[in-house]
Length: 249
Image (cartoon, rainbow, N blue to C red; front, side):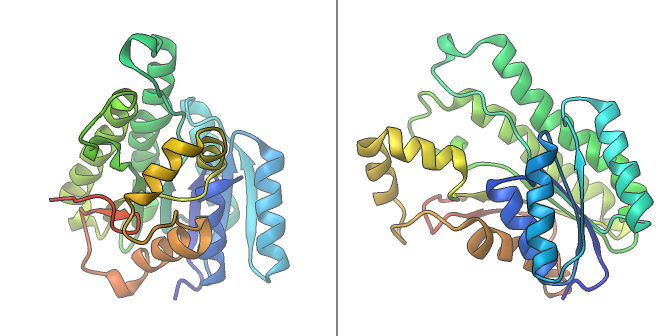
């Protein structure tokens, strides 16, 4: 499905990013697993190689332009091009507005929409002629009660806006750009479920399928399909991969 394609996945050392990296590799893509902690990315690479896939690891602080430039250069140096870009890494500013510090909000902005904006532009020359971008957004802005989630929703909604812009402007270059809004068993969500049993049980009860998605099997496989020719006419969409919880209308 993705044989010979080269993919760069940020935040690939754990959780959703790792699941996406594994799923892309399983379908034949060569994967650059980049993230803040090199050892975690190297673990993802070993997992891919044990399955017979091809992968490389690179340390990358997505809040730093020079680090993003280095990750792209490293990937192109190894794979000669980039066909798939997955912007997954994100620092999350959570809490009531009066409790969210400017530093936390700034980190959310830098690691989310600004990093997405920068990486899309850095990868654009390589993606031309058939590339695919998948940006990770969130259904947080779809909550009827935004208490504690508005700062997080703000940076994620900015990513959705950038996604639509790239889809509109770069389709003529042969680049498709979409966003997914997933629920998945990331380390952060597992911690939240463990430490907030009543709230998390109520949250899961609002998911029609009554479960949180698996990082590779549910989220990763969907991303791999979205990047394939099976979805060649899908562009500029925000797709909730959440068991039916969010209404995107």
